[in-house]
Amino acid sequence: MEIYLLKNKDTIIKTIHTSFFFFYKILQMKNILFTCFSFFV
Image 1: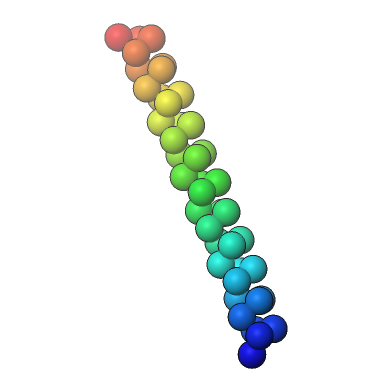
Image 2 (image 1 turned 60 degrees about the vertical axis):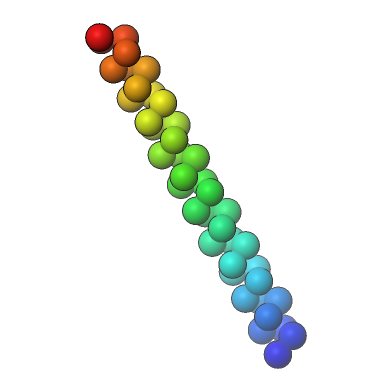
């Protein structure tokens, strides 16, 4: 049971890291697009 919880915890942490990574990438893309838009306008 404890081993299962540890494994599960590791999976949850990995999922959170992945989510944050994607969120960060999306924010970066938004900033780049916004900068380009500002440059053209």
